[in-house]
Length: 268
View: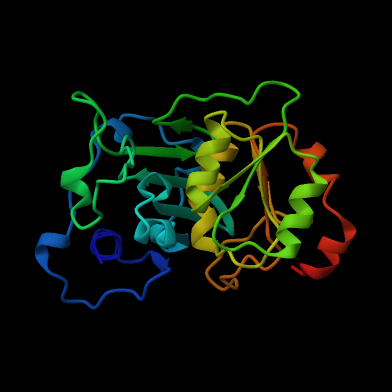
């Protein structure tokens, strides 16, 4: 309610598409954010976007990516995703990790996670990663998996034979099973995984729009399992029915290993 209502009030001509139903007009004033982050406004707007009109933008919002993990107390899997698209292409995005620095332990209850999150005396809880194509990505330290290592990150809660077959075809040294699309892209840009492989139609446009921008802004690549770019115009179907393949480096290595049997099942 806070994200969509705040954006709609400040930018009434935007098209906003969210995972949850859009809130009613009369939202509690306490939920409205009308401030601006001055650090971002100091940055130059890439020249290709200076003439964009508000009504030409589509904003894809997932207020809670990694829902199942959230309910299980795996708070480091949780992200808030806001992606901005122009002419069908993802051009700017925000990944907020509200529980970054949160250390899970058996004694902590989820009832009041904000108060109970602890990560040493000086750790700051939460962080925001953001990026714009043509400007860069910020809020994290870019790191790559050691050369020659193939570490796959994939779904934790939506596994299937198709997913398993596709991951196995990558000949991985290790497989990480975690929640949230935003979280998996963070693993790519922070050197914890080399490819995000999801051979299933489960993921939606609001899951991939913001993370795709962050990845593309640092030279990575995100496509469907066939290698097609994802489209984000307002008329597009919400489901990424042909799955997701994303890497920071060596995209072709992973794309070439997707089995034909998987491609035949996942129709764009």
